[in-house]
Image (cartoon, rainbow, N blue to C red; front, side):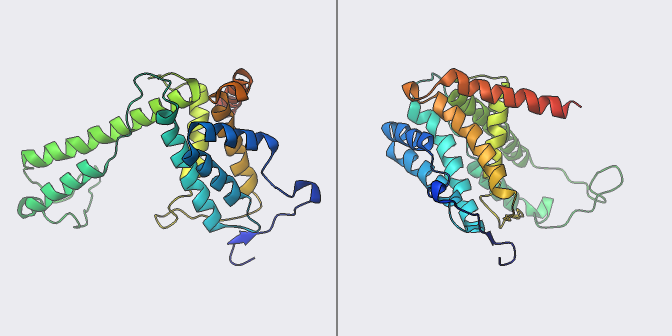
Amino acid sequence: MDGGDAIGWPISPSAANGLWSARRRRLQAALGQRDELFADLYRRAIDSLNEQPLRRGSLVIAGHCIRDLVNGLPDVLADVDSVPPYSPMSKPARELSEVWAEHEDILGPAEMEDTLSEDGRVAGVRVTVPGVVVQAARRVVVASRTGELNARQRHSALVLGRVEVRLDASVKVFRESVAIFERLRHPQRGRDVTVSAETLPRLVKALEIIEGALEGRMGSFFAAVEDLGDILHAANERDGVDGQ
């Protein structure tokens, strides 16, 4: 093992395909009937987690594939009305940066390190902020809140087959499982992606929750009621632990 970068997992002759079970093959086939791209994303995620030895690069690939799979499927299924669009943050953030640069004579450089006083205010700094800067900052806040709400509603459309404003328990567990994979995507952004004996079991547990929701939305291939019931049961167990 090199610096925690990889760990080998024993493979028995009866488990030559590793994570590729008959059920996962059926899910891949069901996704392929909807869109070949999403079937391929799912295949690449499983193949990456299936690599021997499992490496950090494998986890990054799986994280990207799972994220793009679940984020794009609500549009591919196209069976839920009023699914909100994906809301990117890049445009309002860029506009705020540009407006700030135009008023650095008043605000100072954005890179300037702030010194906070005991009450949490910026020590020694009193400025009149131009209205255009406030407007640009407000657009960033609105985009952030809208993006979070839209993402939650898109996930509810994927898991439940309807758009819910409130966070359903099964959607909550689904989103927590997706977040486990999303945290793997950008190790250079302060996220330490490591491989240990606990890594694969933890990811497989999250993967099974995601797969249960996808199976429930793939039509006649799977028993939807049982799968969503499993997710809800997991949500109840988690809430019970958190409430102790």
